[in-house]
Amino acid sequence: MSNKLVYIGGVPYWMTPEGGFVAVELKDGLPVEHVIVKQK
Image 1 (cartoon, rainbow, N blue to C red):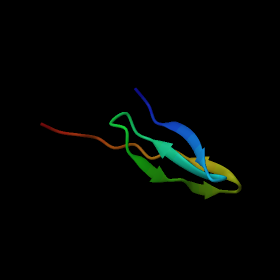
Image 2: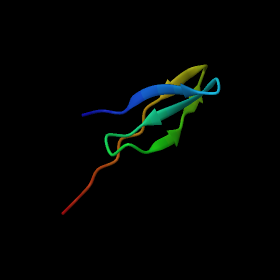
Image 3: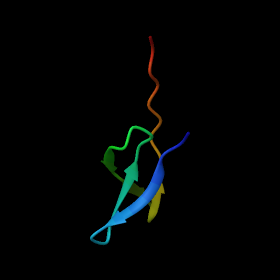
């Protein structure tokens, strides 16, 4: 499952599959998705 782009108070955030929110990095006005790799 991937992150979902949501807006809170007009500010973009990524909603992670775990339910957390991460601030969006914008590059040339477009959101950049960050990938987090978990290892056991």
